[in-house]
Length: 62
Image 1 (cartoon, helix red, strand yellow):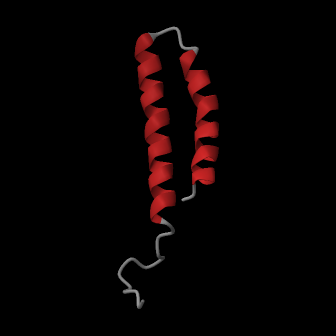
Image 2 (cartoon, rainbow, N blue to C red):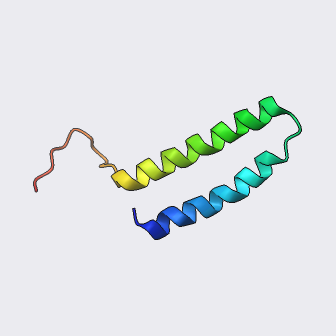
């Protein structure tokens, strides 16, 4: 993952955070905020690791 790709993900996240911050209930705000960060964390991790092989049992030859 490059810095540019990461920044694009963060830019997309900003819109979600703005939407969440308009909540009038602190419980819902916290719950939605955590969901946004967990989703972005998953995306960053998946992009950092790379594509998964179709058959996870097959060994790679490097």
